[in-house]
Length: 314
Length: 314
Image 1 (cartoon, rainbow over the protein chains, first blue to last red):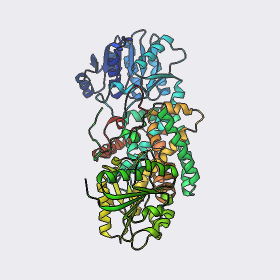
Image 2 (image 1 turned 135 degrees about the horizontal axis):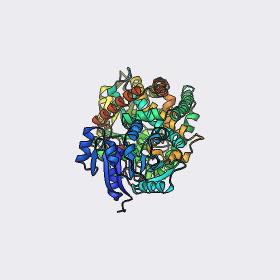
Image 3 (image 1 turned 135 degrees about the vertical axis):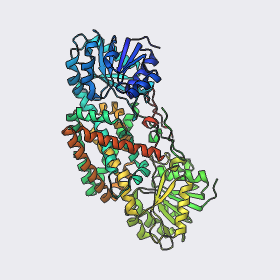
Image 4 (image 1 turned 90 degrees about the horizontal axis):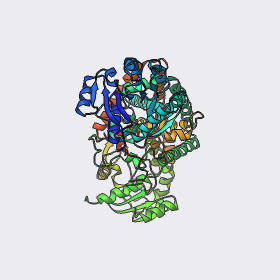
């Protein structure tokens, strides 16, 4: 059990990430007090029932009063309005951070409202599942994952070091980079993969020659992997694409360029070009497993049996 | 324990699928004798060591002598040559089937060599993992999965019924359809998903602005899911694309059309179009889980902990 490193943490938003932070903070004893805020009555009631916080509020401004760490955990499209609302109640010397999947737009939307006496250190824990809401969180979500912080050049080193320590005690490893580099990296490792997963699932459900029932039935041949990613939270992902437009369009352009060349190889029967790519990509998988970023178990360790387990287990 | 339904099963090819069939046949006692054939010395030696068959041969023609069920389990590009080689040794009344991921090309390549006295019933068990080779097989691979048979209209109903029963006793459910419909269905649920997974992994490893080290490090944000599929056997998949060209190009055309429209929505900030698609795709995921075709466990039930388990477990 570590000692509390913040006195009072305020979680603005209690979905998958907000609730997981609450569990991780409790597990390691990182705060003396946790307050929370959520937009809907349903989430507030669930948070009360699960005792995610010591106190929950409909009004985020009430939740942040007296907090020395404030974490924005709502969809990034809401950050500007939320920060404007809480700004008058932020305590001098407090740190405000976030968990958004884009960073350039967050700096743009949030910075104008931050009082001079408050440290703003944008962050992004690279962790999640396809489930959302306050019941989907769990303490282990950040274990062994990366958290990227994008402090501005003038950020207070002590405040950055403390936030870094916080994430490490939540189980994560921390990396620092600029917001624009973050947005480029995430565009290729996360945003474009999500976009093409959403897209193929849409394409497959719109066909005349193949029924949706057949798509579902035979999904284990590869398609089902994409549906997990394409089941991610729609609001969160809409906001990601609207707020990382340039980097996503740039990486998408490269993806389409490469796909066109693959399409041409298939049309002209260029088996060597296909084989070369398919061999190269296999090596990347090995590196990811060696880096401890995925399981080596076949098929992600999915259960094999008479019928795939349908019960949700966390 | 079921009674043997074939006297002697010959497995041509002892990779992931061939070795899994051997395990499934042994588990249910579906044959009195299993013979096998493999192209490389290494696979033959491994098959001996694992006792996958009662006898293994370098020459497929020797393996099929006396067999009443022959299953082609090599990459589909080899089927024509293999069938030509074994044809003279096929026993009258025997059934020959395969496990290839395409069916039109298999009918085209294999049929010319099939003696009149032999039943040719093409098949495709929709099952696999990203691993290949004789050590990667396991008896449960087909449990709860679908196997598609594409018997020609003139096929002997008794031979078809017997092969259907065989796959059911291997754990699978069986569906019958035409080769061309099979190829269209698989193009969208399997071949195009594999192609775009291979493609995005290729794109990500070719960037100047983002290092390959960063791609690997932050892969848990979505990308790593694609790398599993893109780690599938290169020879098998080269042959799939070369042999299901028309259906793949047709489905790929639709995918790109839809992607272009999504790209436009991002460029013009059309959040509603994005949100609508992302909501629709979430429902497809639910249907797949309800149909027992995937686990409902968050993140495929991947382990969460200080470091992702790197040991390979089967």
